[in-house]
Amino acid sequence: MASHVRYRKDGHVARVTLDRPEVLNAMDLQMHAELGEVWDDVEDDDDVRVVVLAGAGDRAFSVGQDLRERAALDADGAQRTSFGSRGLPGWPRLTERFDLTKPVVAAARGYALGGGFELLLACDIVVAADDAVFGLPEVRLGLVPGAGGAFRLARQLPLRKAMGHLLTGRRMSAAEAHGFGLVNDVVPAEEVDACVEGWVADLLAAAPLAVRAVKQAVLRSVDMPIEDAFVAEYPEETRRRASRDAVEGPRAFAEKRDPAWRGE
Image (cartoon, rainbow, N blue to C red; front, side, top):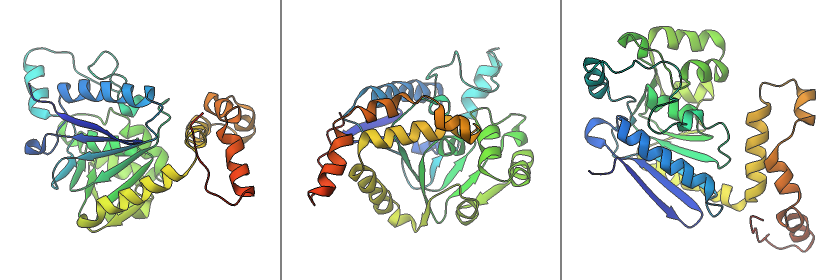
């Protein structure tokens, strides 16, 4: 059976590609299972500092759930899904990997709909082609955005803006998504890869343990009162504080040289 995900490591960068371009990278159960193994490996491998996530081809990042597979499952009497993926292949999926400490940079070309958009909402940095289209059309299909879209969009947009899209399934352009702050950069399609690599280079120039500590602290504290955030425990920050890299940065600055990060 052919793989539905391409995964390779390029130095400190893990490159993950949703690889079903013939169906606009729709995500079936096999793809979810393969992605689950990928995210496990990404988190377990300390040599991986950055993840780049993309969809194969130039027509779509992903149009979300494979609805033909869903229809077949419904016909067979399979349990219908709701919020979250517990008990399903690939769990916890990226949209529920709240403890993933590696930064994920996404390249969005073409359609990013349904679960595809939900994947992007769970990433840390998103570069979009200027012709990219985003949306959560689930309500038009009798479904709900169960992979976090209902929750993340309402946190990442003003509430009425989020509700307008969630309750109608309306799409938004790359320019609109950029204006909302949902994507970091919008560039011509042919410049997406170069823009992504610029972000990757900046992330690799940063101390890996510091990056992980910041990501964990931000995501764990974002809903806390700020006074609680200051005194909460962040394991990645405990690790960074005790690391050689925490000493290397100031030393390299004092010696007027580039730091040599060791990730330890």
